[in-house]
Image (cartoon, rainbow, N blue to C red; front, side, top):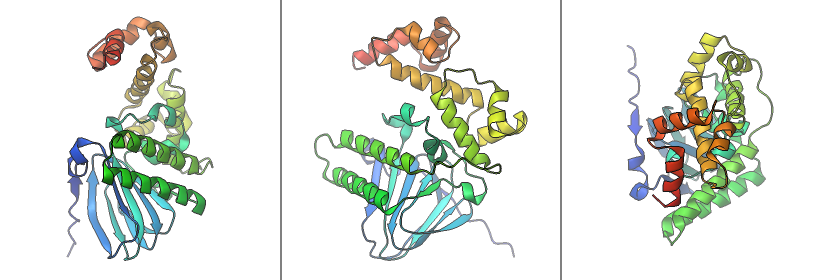
Length: 297
């Protein structure tokens, strides 16, 4: 008799985010009893930091035994489950990057960031799952940041939300720096794609024809488009346009930079083309956006 597939629960950020603030920290310095989280997926990003004890993690059907210093990142749509033994120490950080002023424009060009957070679907071979192993020194740094975040969330003192964003940004930088710098091999489609995403983010003003992208990953054009859309949820050029808008918004925050200069710095063919695309995306012109941000609206 065929065993029915497990029930997969889709969780929403509204279940976890206190008063709509899109960061939540669950920190267990020492679990008194064993814990089990059945198969689920969600519409936000989650980081699991395993500090001590024993347990296992299941990601899209692949089971991995957890050991101290392991970090796993779960992006939208990834089915995962978790189990740990009594006495284990770990933390779950849940956040919505689209709703937070995180320094993504500066992190997106880093290979480690794309390998951990840039790939939505992880239907790859086991070695490409989004994880890393922290050294004891870096693990202690990460744990200290988590403890401060948990304390700020618990005490809710004035400025707590601003500090939580700052501490989360520092933790992301720490994890990106800890990611191995080795270049992926020929069979590591996911990691080669992460390298491409980092390069596109860092050099989004350049022309990125489909052939250039496909060759960077070592795939035929038709296969590359399927792989890219499965991994990011977007077509290649839609993703590139999003990167250009992200940089444009960052540059618009500086009133000393002319709109025309922003158009060239973000890869648009002309200032008028930039203005048309910007209005189509945001409903206002770049000038109106800048004015509204300056007026606090």
